[in-house]
Amino acid sequence: MRIIIDSMVCCGSSECIKACPEKAIVLHDGKAVLDEAKCDLDGICIPACPQGAIGFLEN
Image (tube, rainbow, N blue to C red):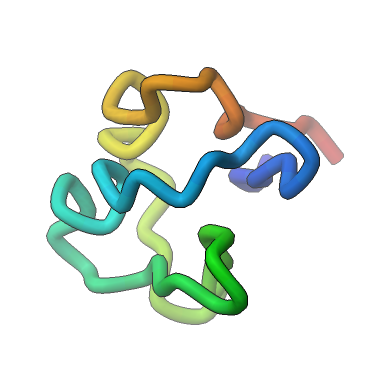
């Protein structure tokens, strides 16, 4: 399982960045980008996104 961010839906609000305790999300060109190496898969960022652009993807 992994977390994905849909860049087509992301509005760049940075709410997910504020919510992530691992600092695994950054803004790049106005869109949220996930550093999977830092992500602990706790999913705190998912409900923080006002656009619903973040979710789990099962491998």
